[in-house]
Image (tube, rainbow, N blue to C red; front, side, top):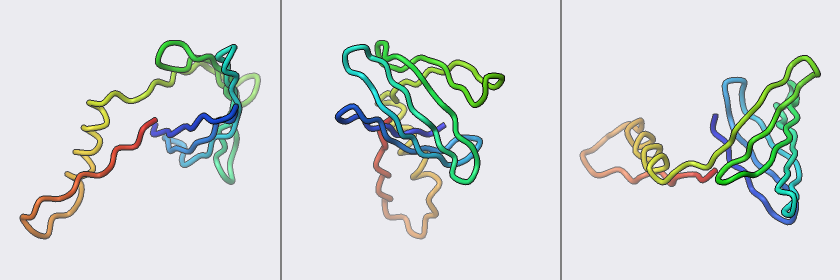
Length: 110
């Protein structure tokens, strides 16, 4: 899964892509309780509700589509080495027309 989240003034927003497809994220968070809740929206398809708590360098919690379709999750930020590897991988996939050095793609933070 590739996921970018933004936290500002109690609002949680973002977007990403996973095995199901592209999605948007809309929700809220509480700075004092470290709790957050959001909906992952797959346009034209379905939604998944998430509720979790920030702990250390990640968010742990549970997701639910229906009472019978649910599970746990853990989201953690990418480490610097992962960002560098992603940037190098993006460069390796670009077609090369000359022997001139290709610029690195800017890494995206989670």
